[in-house]
Length: 143
Image (cartoon, rainbow, N blue to C red):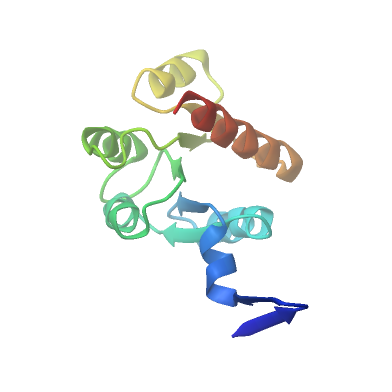
């Protein structure tokens, strides 16, 4: 589909490809739907419903950021982040953990396992948007 504005003609898929891709991995469809609703206006969102699918989608979509639920079937968030950090193409991608636990031990384990940040459920849309933007910006300023 072409959009024409004055002399500028842009393919719609070119516009979409300019958006940053965020991979969301959560076994609960309602959580993925909520995250998509929060982020879809600014980012291209791809989804995975378990840890194994998250790894496959990461290789297929080359995301700019990954948001992982900690507790998922087939492979938990800790297992996924460990694998992603081994891959040269994905090792520097910012990865945020989603967790229902706000305990200090859980936070320490998350940050010491290769995650760049964590976000405690329930999800506040404004806070999540701000956290995602800040994490993407901080990673871009480093590279």
